[in-house]
Image (tube, rainbow, N blue to C red; front, side):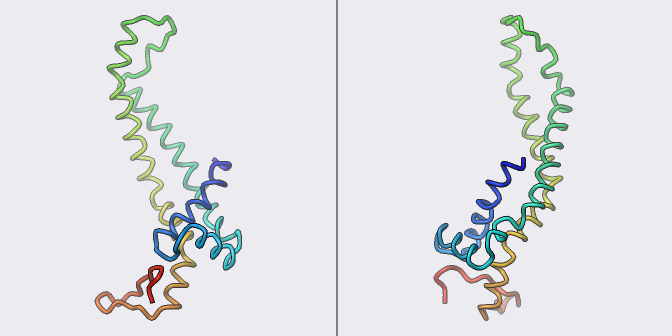
Length: 152
């Protein structure tokens, strides 16, 4: 998880900031982030990312294994290559997919609050810069709205 997150976290920061429309392209986003915040800006959300991904993996594996046991999947996993078992395991394939999908949904639901915190950490400087540098306040909502790239 750590090696994965060291690579993915900066990419996720760039993705989130690009989705806000604050940058023209990926290069502009990286240059701007490194100039204004340094490498810390790309890794600010790393502790939250780790705090989210570790429980996600645990909930995913535990719930998937529990569901497979409940559905009676994988109980006869001998290695004699018998054709009846092979046909049975092919017919069980949709149940494996259902088990994995439900487990993924449960894990995502459990860790979703941490995902919100992670996204806020990744984009907080962009929002602050846009709000402070723009008098663009929506009269209908009374809230500051982010400025899109190229807008005056």
